[in-house]
Amino acid sequence: MTPRPCPVNAAPAATPAWWTYGYVWLVLSGPLLVVIASFVTMYIAYTRVDPVVDDNYYQKGLALSPYVQSRDHVEAAHAPASLSTPPVKP
Image (cartoon, rainbow, N blue to C red; front, top):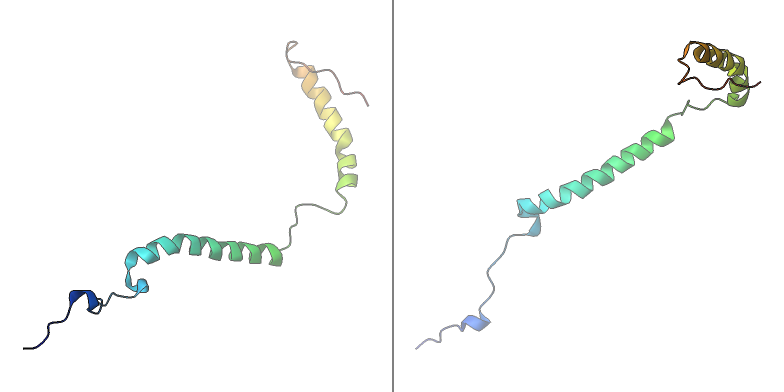
């Protein structure tokens, strides 16, 4: 008579590795894409020059002041009485 193996001591069934499941890649792909996009954004920010602010922005703003004041006076003259704004004092 041969002894039968006890089911408690039986070897567990072989399960596939975690990377073979498609849902794992579906869940991990979102955060992975965000991390990659942040590195790309950081690279673009550090390698490109930001020409938005000029070195002489204050002097250029002062040079525009007479034009802005004259524009405001013209708009105030043509606006209806109920919508007119007080004139800009120099």
